[in-house]
Image (tube, rainbow, N blue to C red; front, top):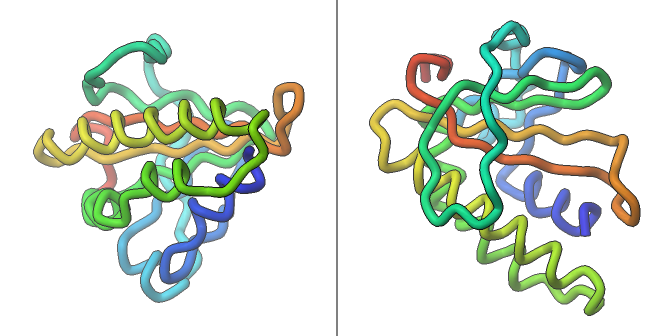
Length: 158
């Protein structure tokens, strides 16, 4: 699943490559996505603890950024990059992937999470999204991904 999902997350016009890992986020702006520029390091990992969203929650609320584990890659999108990503409808792309039956449920869960978090970020003025990619995956995956809506106070300027 994650190899297939990873292709979607970077299949926009271009993608920003991480410059920091472990405890930090890389700030990604729409210009980075459209021109292929490498993103500058973003805010460091000293953020308050936040509960993980339930996979059954129908509506997310933007909150503090999630801590980025050591060895993982954290991306904190600007507001403009968040709006651009929402226009690409990544949840629909993930659901449309032709995957083996054993990956279908996982792809659908990730698609719902992305849809839920992007919806919350888009409808909250100034909010953004955070994506964490952890190469130390759970069983059966190449990578583990997480997407969270982030409150405006923690979002980088566009």
